[in-house]
Image (cartoon, rainbow over the protein chains, first blue to last red):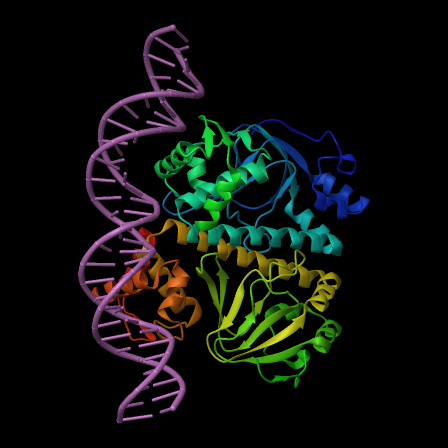
Length: 231
Length: 231
DNA sequence: ATATTATATTGATAAATATCAATTTATTTT
DNA sequence: AAAATAAATTGATATTTATCAATATAATAT
């Protein structure tokens, strides 16, 4: 965790999350007073599960993975974040602890906003508040899909889902380069690294995808979608 | 779905959820105007996944299961509800659809509050609003635990968790009678009915629990907790 | 109470997935 | 570039879990 800066103000910032467009100028100014930006190297924690929750973060540059640290070293990656994405915490209003970890997968920047300031603004602005509830509820819906996917589908369907997620939601291309390791993809699908590799290989052998050590090309997305459906 | 009544007002109601204690008298009166109570027979839907979300519910009597309907008929029971529990919906502010189903497992009553009225009150009362966020965040934390438990633990740990959940959180006794079927317990643990039955039998054979067709007695909770830990 | 239906149980087997060890390939350091 | 380290891959095998079919038990209707 290196340099941090405060060289711009929220009002003119074009990297602010859409949520903040619901704020008044005064509220933005108030947030701007305590906010700060941090530069993270690849592999560094923005949030650490169990640690105190003191700030809401906005990823303004780079990319990060959000994951749950399970009991037996088993991590479950919930999602990948890219600019500009808000990173809240369900510890907010509950126990003020982080319940997931956020780690950058490439050099990144985040803007950190004091949780108390955030709370004040929530109190003062009801449309901001409803937008925030919308944000949380969307996260819950994604979590529901994750839960039914990981518990109800077999390896093939889960790997297909991960690949489609990366292609459709994250990189927005059918061919992409990624910093995710095989272990990361395994953590996205609740599989072991070895099983994950085997399914990828199968897909490659069947001509559905091709890949190198850090790039993927989804040749036949329809087939992946079909595999996702039939599990 | 049979009788419904409106024979009391929220102000004097001692079955109201704690959340509503944050409301002013006027706000309570406002909610009271549109609310109504419904009696459900065992097995009836309070909410149905995919259906329109029009009301927030409060379970005031009986018991219900909240579950996700997966693609291949696989349901995942998220939790059991008893009085007095609020039943919101992540569709609120998002798509106004239900994203889970709620079905009673015994004759029950619920108080239904118009979602628009609820939204108005959220807007007008910021401490109510923050409490609601707290409510949602607690649900998210439970969901995280569900996700890591179901993906990271083996059958034994998952059954142990389900039994401990029923004993500690739902029935508050180490010996309890339940309306849950074996299939329901399987749905709580993301197992098949048969696997679920086998693990229960193992636990019985080892003297950890005893059970009949609709009752359980947890003889050795410490052992169950140990099994939960080692997975 | 008997018949009927649904639920629970058991056994045998197949399928899915993880584990462990060895090897290869890629990445980083010297 | 060579050496050292980390990550990816493969194969063999064990473990976990589901499936299918049969039977038993419980719950409900007649």
